[in-house]
Length: 168
Image (cartoon, rainbow, N blue to C red; front, side, top):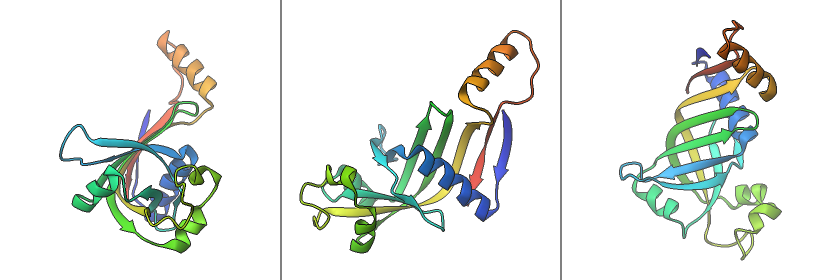
């Protein structure tokens, strides 16, 4: 795997947006000072132009209570079908914005909030990334497997993947 660092803000945001929105689901971890961490699969609503990652959540959740005590979060994105992964560390902000809730509202979200989009327990988490590490392939999954197989029997093919640090 080739190693690269993405330091330019625009390129860093572009890479985070590509991976977070492309993979969509992540394990969202809170209470990082007390292992085992509280971890929940959550769906990304948006990565905005500043690189913030937005989630819909409930005020009744452990995640909400944990973020009120410690804003540090870790997000783990994984898409084995495309061989793309990202680990992201950042700080969460709790946001109460009905316009943004309306923007993100859809049939999937409706299943989690039985009282509808005006449920007073709906809250937003805005994650401000500080550091991320990613892994992805340059090629389609089957080509990557073939290259790995060829390399394992002594073949010498060019690098098949990328990984790197993302700094915002």
